[in-house]
Image (cartoon, rainbow, N blue to C red; front, side, top):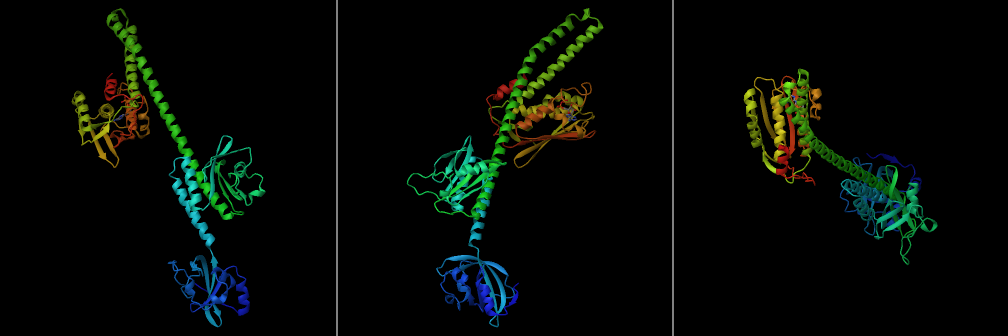
Length: 535
Ligand code: ADP
């Protein structure tokens, strides 16, 4: 809302208005009654009398759709921005501040117009820098960052001689420059960029002729650049490189340029830090999977080599038990039985280790597998056990998925077997089903067995971790570890929900598109794998 000011004396008021740093207009009934000298200059006229008496709307740009005309009045905002039209047809952005005064005995509008061209330009450039920052968030390499930074410097910020330098070894390399020159400045030598590097501070040179550090990048005969501004790009407090700009003009840069370039350098530094973090993460993941692969290889070789001496122990112990049992006393027979039992157990553990180490060995191709058929086959294999336990396996509709038959069979066999094994119910029930989600399938295997306490939900997926003795429920404790490895191999997840005495449900996801699973050097064919699993 505008406020009414009374000027006691017109001459004093005009003196005050002439001294103002803003353009001043007094408007009555939409006609200009008074302008100060600054207003005359702002509108591109020579004399106030060329303006006085004209309609104020003549000086409002027709391009400015936001503000057509705002006479002073009750509902006029106190401050607003608009574009004024100058004598030569060009426009100028101003911010108006308006009041109602008593002028010549009539209520008139007193308008202070401040030229905000520079501010507008600064805001537009800042806006471009922020848009650039968003774009850089998607960039993956340093080269792309350098290119995109060069682009914004030239296209949006309007600089001409620009360069993006990066520290490599003992030098500062300008790989991206406006004139495509690759330039190297030794870090212990001269150069404004070297000074920015070593001090970590923006260098602002308004006359390069007076700066001993200035190094010309011009070819002989070309005019020399007379101003230079260089901003360090600091990543985690270390100068990574510089943004350097030169101009053929003297005093070409101002505080606004410094601010804008420092903001830009900050964004560039954040993007570089993100790329470095991503690269670190990728390297650790690669190393981790390489170490896992080596571990699998090692486990495979060791378990494989342990098999044959163990078989000899088993064979000779059984031979002794058959042929020489009568010559042994009770204690010796007991020792021999223990050797046979222990070697049998060791053989089971070795077989599970072998199986586990094979999961990561990749197959050449995934195939389309009918899971319903797989579960039916498992049911047939377990026929005797199911009949003996009076159990029932209910299988809802299961999809066809992409995967490897041997591993899918292994996965479902382990879970269904457990559902029957850890089940004291008179009529064990296993339910196998699936829910289709957007890009994965969610499978479940539920039972009405003994259940698992929540504190053991993680433990049971660890290798050889069991909750019961061999006498209570036989097993090695490797089954769920194998299941987890299979599911994770396809990029899925496995977890358990359970209540002791009520039952257990295992859930796992398998992505719909597993074609991306890469074949490694040690890839096995489907036949080879099937053979290995049977061996
Ligand atoms: P194993 O069956 O050889 O013991 P697993 O890795 O398959 O090894 O299972 C680990 C442990 O998890 C089992 O010893 C058992 O205590 C628990 N467990 C697995 N499945 C079930 C289930 N369906 N109900 C109750 N407990 C289970």
